[in-house]
Length: 273
Image (cartoon, rainbow, N blue to C red; front, side, top):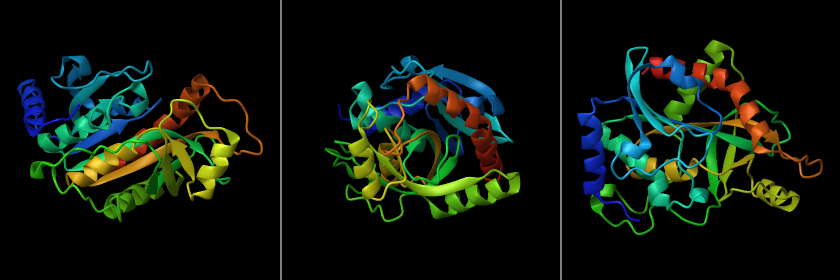
């Protein structure tokens, strides 16, 4: 399914009519990461299934709500759960909310995700700021789009994660005494986790952590000129020589324990906008 500018504007108009103003910051909350919502003075909650042209969240641990409110007097809009390619959606559907956020007036985008740590220095519960990424997903959200209103098709990706935003995050982390590492994220299709050989392959490519999201959203954010930054929570340690079975319940539990730190960090950054 290809989204038109008309569909994006229709969605934004619906949300404006619901009372959503002009949010300064947009936030995408990943797997097991929801405590941030409690820091927002929530004004409006809109389920995804009520929003025109919006996909519906099919992953049971993604709430599927769009939240609008104030955080430290800054108007924000947050996705309580995202969409994934492995759910059967096209990449244009996966990234549609980013385009809508831009249409609503969002000026900064903060993303989070749960990831497997392949770097031996990463431990469960670590927060890792993305400095770059490798896209191993089989589809691109810009494929088929050729409307100048969407931006330049041949998007420069030499610096996909905004350096100023990343610097603000590192400064905030130091102020709050929250350890934050930095690394390169590789996005795969999922939904299965990786084999030992695949972890070796991805690590040899130069990736520090692996996940199933974020990169398509970052591509589109760059496409529409929306500065973005992303943080991964390391939920499992992916050493191919000592690989242990992992289930999604454990991943959710680890993400939940790190959630408070990530939420505090995002709130501090947004308060400085």
